Length: 166
Image: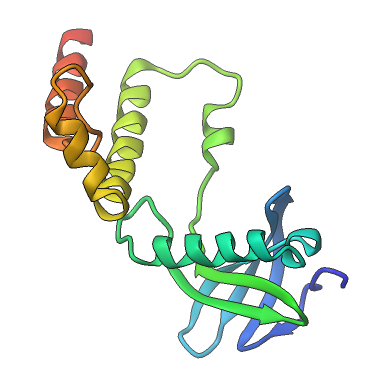
């Protein structure tokens, strides 16, 4: 099946533009006229859509991600199917990708620390929600580093590093 085209209607969504693609699928920007907001539609590649194991993993990951609520984690709105091709409708987040933000140019220390804190915070939310037993088990092992979910400690450490860098 060819990928959707700009202007095409996918359920209630209308494709506006292609945002990108890779080994795990292709992503389009679309309009949701019912709710008056932009969405991102991520389509599973055809070769993976035919693989029962990959399709199951796609659905499990979508369910798990839909349970998370954090400004740096996109919200999943729907799992759909278009002509036999599974897709996710999710929050369309504006801005640069992490790959482009980091790029090949050096970043100032304060930007690295801020970005690190934002990433750690999002990972902490995911770990606390999706892996509560792993986080609490790691916290009980004295020779292991503190779980990333212990964000107040991480935040204090990063603020201390920022103060010492200035």
